[in-house]
Image 1 (spheres, rainbow, N blue to C red):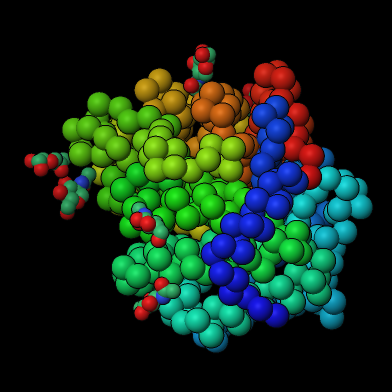
Image 2: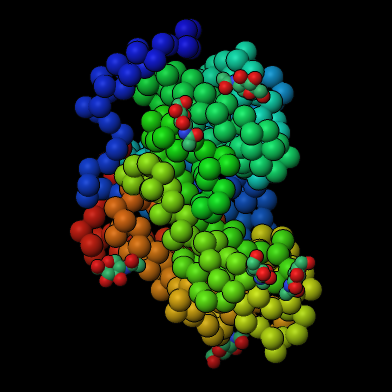
Length: 403
Ligand SMILES: *[C@@H]1O[C@H](CO)[C@@H](O)[C@H](O)[C@H]1NC(C)=O
Ligand SMILES: *[C@@H]1O[C@H](CO)[C@@H](O)[C@H](O)[C@H]1NC(C)=O
Ligand SMILES: *[C@@H]1O[C@H](CO)[C@@H](O)[C@H](O)[C@H]1NC(C)=O
Ligand SMILES: *[C@@H]1O[C@H](CO)[C@@H](O)[C@H](O)[C@H]1NC(C)=O
Ligand SMILES: *[C@@H]1O[C@H](CO)[C@@H](O)[C@H](O)[C@H]1NC(C)=O
Ligand SMILES: CC(=O)N[C@H]1CO[C@H](CO)[C@@H](O)[C@@H]1O
């Protein structure tokens, strides 16, 4: 297989496919759902498996995560969950297409735990890049997936501060795209939302050229990794953010910067979080923003990670909670004893959906639908948060993208 086409040929291929371009019609929107494969090991009501996915609620489902080996080949991180001699997760996932022929199934490579350095090493080396392209193509063909989602967190950051990551990542995506075009595979990436991080990690012009979608991770702005309370999905900054020199540390500034940098709005999926970031307050009577914390909030029964709670855990643990809605940041939090819980409810998701539609974005990404109330135990039906997206789309005259 010849991977490296000259640029002229690449341009010609792009022109040739512009007719069947993956970009949605104006009134069609994407709902791109991430499936966290490790949720099959969650206990009790939190256990989420492939069959819990409602394929009618998504246009795309991405399996998370595949890893990467030092030579650039793919690494199946949990062969027991994925393979036919175990739980056969890949095949069962692809079988969802039988229930919704419009559904596309992608495999997501990377994620937080895979780190940054391994990717930095692979994309810097032409032979390793070729290994990755070949390994991805053979994986997609073998399991019947429709494409790859590249989730490198993050080029030129964390355990790799190599400034060349950014350009090498573009090169990697170009080579994947060239190999994908004749095969009809989809190429997306999950990207950081924060304005100050965009130029460090991404050449937006080139990402816009090579990617079918960018899934903008509009979350994790604050968390127990700070030493104070803050909302992780704040849409806008409030005056106190300005006081703490965080006036551009919010979703709105990030989305506007992606757009100003040249990303086609039709390719952007606005990331909606169905989980909270939580804190333990030093003094439960001091529960505003930027108040002292002693650490992460207590873990939930299903996600079992300090500092995080799924919406399903919040609504089950605290059915009588009172949301405190910040009318400037446009997000709710609850305070229960010394626990400070910043999350999204039906109101704040509705506002975010309107925001994204007002900006003509191509659709929405969900991280993740296994922490929505997928069982409907909390009394608002199954997937109450995900359904807000669908209700809003219908109200405003949009339909789901036809793949
Ligand atoms: C992106 O890459 C192109 C082509 O290499 C280059 O001309 C441009 O300056 C780069 N932009 C940024 C912001 O790095
Ligand atoms: C914000 O930045 C200004 C100017 O650099 C500095 O004087 C001030 O201490 C900073 N405030 C906080 C809360 O960090
Ligand atoms: C957090 O840490 C910074 C730097 O050590 C300090 O200036 C600030 O006062 C701390 N904030 C809180 C709320 O404890
Ligand atoms: C929530 O309120 C209902 C109705 O008032 C009550 O029956 C229930 O015990 C409360 N649940 C909790 C966990 O406080
Ligand atoms: C979206 O646009 C409508 C109509 O202009 C406006 O009323 C609404 O406030 C906007 N919402 C957001 C979140 O931008
Ligand atoms: C294709 C490309 O841009 N390759 C560069 C990747 O990074 C290394 C250094 O880490 C450069 O030497 C390459 O030119």
